[in-house]
Amino acid sequence: MGGVVFDYDSAPERYRLGMAVARASSTASLYEEVSSRLVALGARRTLDVGCADGALQSALPPGPLVVGLDAAAAMVRAHPPPVVRGDAARLPFADDSFDAVTALNMLYHLADPCAALREARRVLRAGGTLLASAIARSDSPELARFWRRPATSFDAEEAPALVAEVFDRVTVERWDAPLLTLADAAAVRDYLLGRQAPPSAALRAAAELPTPVRITKRGALVIASGGCA
Image (cartoon, rainbow, N blue to C red; front, side, top):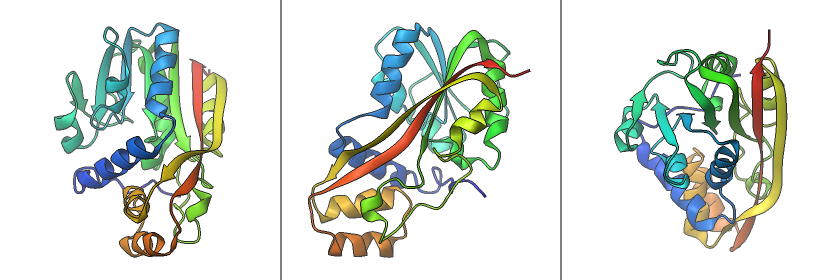
């Protein structure tokens, strides 16, 4: 199975639309959660792989260094420095360079996410931590009759096992709760467009679904350390 279509250079506004809907409609933030965990870990140097335009850096307090890396030129241009354009499977950093590596809802873009996980392990210092998030295939079930996101290479159902192929200490925090409320038809449409649903599906859902509607978010945050031999 392949990865999610990577359209951040060809359609950056699609991503930004989805993020705007999430910020306006959600009662919880993945980036705030990961930020609090990085602070608790005492991470002074974090590599944010698939950084987009800097949502994680914006959530962190001043002090810790966050280096962004993204394959999309449009995202790199929008991210505050330091940031580099690069490949998650070929990180342009020396071994043992970071206290933490994050990969938040991005490994599903890769046909072989384990290649990126191995690179994350390589650049982590001894005792460093990986934080990788994944969306479940059953996410947003209230919208399933209109559109369901295709299975990917790194869904929440298999993500912990994939991480465990590379790291020897893995814990998983799952979520399954109505964490997002779409207030009106425009929010329904924009939420689906932001998730790469076909415009026809987004428009049909906006026309037919009674609003406001609470959306169940399902996924997992995988926290790992220690490399497998």
